[in-house]
Image (cartoon, rainbow, N blue to C red):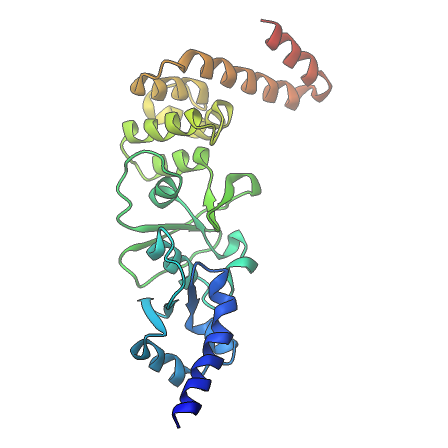
Length: 255
């Protein structure tokens, strides 16, 4: 009987380990069942010390390293519990808003909830999970620590949509540019739709970027603004006369 129990446990761990190995030691109940582990066996494993429950339907395999942002990762897995992390697309949820700022080590906004953005409307029963419906293009997110995370320029735009404190958003912008996680020109693009709300000319992303950088008082503001203006000029010319973009780039460098 003891031999049977040991072999059953070994067989179960063998089924779960390949999944947990590529999911920060985590496995969902749906994934375990698809791997051939019965629900009864899965319910018994926590009491045997094989699994540790970290969220509803999400478990951590004993002996596997514990990753940072464990609860955020578990909440992300809950969004599509049957789909393994390596097969997911942004349609299953992208880490965004405050959660993205925390994962990217930008600003000091408290990430007291788990924010995700999806292209379709979804709801969560968890009070600490917020699901935002908004399209995300390919260039607006990056893989970070195995998670799909909105890039800093998108984080700033999302935080402004959420009416976050402008100074906190300004720190996100400056921190990201300083660490070269994103570029001044990309921020000018993403901030443009919010300019009018701050009393600036509508769609003037350059003016709003300058205002944010002035709030922070970074010594590199002038250089960053030059880069942003060059980006906006190239983008504008690209829309009108694509063939002249290289020439304009050369002119801006010469100045």
